[in-house]
Image 1 (cartoon, rainbow, N blue to C red):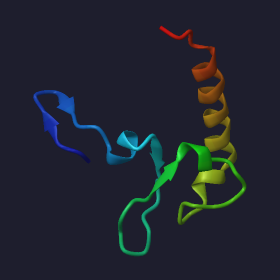
Image 2: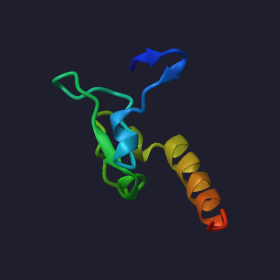
Image 3: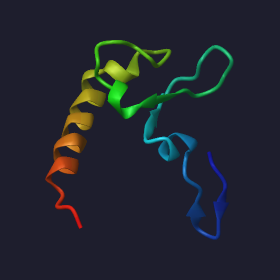
Length: 73
């Protein structure tokens, strides 16, 4: 969990890199960041392979479609 300052939670380090955090830790206990471009590319970057799961890929596809649909300011 990341620090909470007066109701505001700090941003996860992966979000600053436009990446997703692996839900399972690596052997050293750290949580890896996977670049959004590497999600659902048929190559497992997360220790448990969650970046290639059907659920992750479904939500990533929805996110990608909605992100493309937003008008530019």
